[in-house]
Image (cartoon, rainbow, N blue to C red; front, side, top):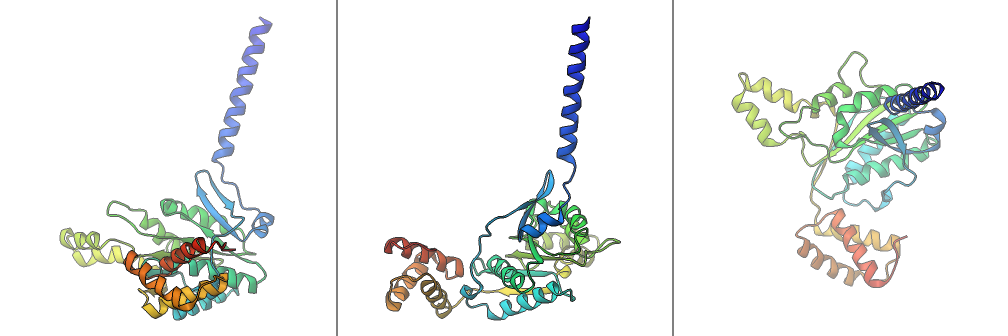
Length: 292
């Protein structure tokens, strides 16, 4: 009899432990001010919800981003105002692939954060976790001592995806609105974040086509700052490569660099910052040099 009671007691205790562990996994860990202060960058994990620190951010120096001077200055100015507690806009960086959209966001954060003694934090949210954005906003609202850029790379929505409504509500909708210490930056190849055939389908099938289209394109209106990125010219492509080669001390002449650039861009069928970086990696490997 005593053995049965002991077994039941042990089983009950194990059950309680499992329940406690399950509840702990479900409970959103609140960002502690000390932990937020210790790191400059985080990744938002939606399940279970929480901020995961990033010890080393994958980014390039702002000086290496060529051919985007106007957009660079606009984003820097917007970010500086935000970090100083002044009014600023959500930003949508849209346009050509590989022209430095996400690189500019990360470089601007590093530059401005150094100017404001580390109070500016960047948090990456993955496209598939956009529906959890309101929960992230609620957590960040409780850390008024810091400013947060919530960043989503390559943001777009498919025809059957309705999570864009969560993004609309989080940016400017709802009773509380967007927290004053949070700004949203996104990059996309699409200006309106939605595929053209999705918008056209709404126009052709809706009872009121105008209202249906307005519902779809109004998402991009939540971004007060639109920054367009376009394919670069050959001269801009050369300037990108020369900047990389000088920065990393590649032992190659300008003539040879330009010749390699022409051949590489023809092979790839494109000229962009990403293509330039890929060529630099190829040249560094052939020259036996490391990119440190």
